[in-house]
Image 1 (cartoon, rainbow, N blue to C red):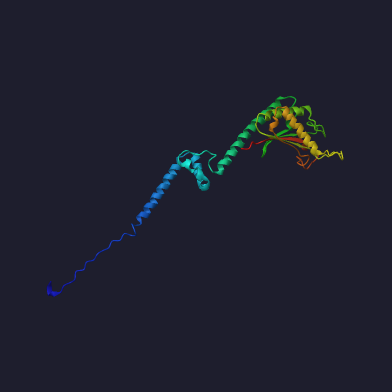
Image 2: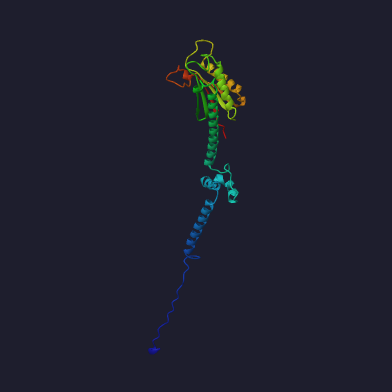
Amino acid sequence: MEGGNESPIIVKKVKKGHGGHHGGAWKVAYADFVTAMMALFIVLWILSQSQEVKEAVAGYFKDPVGFSTKSKSLIEGKGMGPSQVPDNRIVVNEEEQIIELQKQQFQKMQEELMTSLSNDTDLKGLSEQVKIEMVKDGLKIELTDDANDIFFELGTSSLKPTAQKLIGKIGQEISKLPNKIVVEGHTDSRQFSNIGTGFTNFELSSERALSAKRALVYGGLSEKQIDEVRGYADTRLRVPEDPYSFKNRRISITVKFNEK
């Protein structure tokens, strides 16, 4: 060294850091990637399953707690029956299917009944008095009187022969179904003048409903299919603007939907 001047030697050490306790941000990114891949595989697995399993998975997300006891069979690939899936839509769909099937049976019965009536020369004149419609409770068959009192003599509960034959045919057709029925009697608003006897339109409508019930049974309907026999008097008029109209005098037979 010249001139006796020595320059000190400086050594710099660069300390390499590790970006955290055990590594860098790449681990977080990798974890996100693995999670995303797992989610993708689950989605692909679900898409490859049957509709039954898809509905079961949907049920889990709707009600995880209620589903917990049934999740094992799904994981093991055993599948789940519709009655096991905790999804209210499945239950509703089952009920709708049951109702729809019964509607088809009712429609078939209606067609057979109307064909039977049209083929019977004695009953052709009464077929126009028969109204059949689907209502909330089932199939309603309504027999409406006319100005000539074709079903009952005015003020009595005795069925005329042709009316009894008509109701017997209805009973024969209904007997082919397992459904229960309700028979209702209705009158117009003409009141009895038998003061003090207690016999009113309620008694008359009830007795007419019972006469119709007996004619149904005579036609082949089982007594066990009778659910109720009711008499409403004039409390449910068909033509409320004309309470004395013969159209208010009627017998209603409702074939009820079977409950699940």
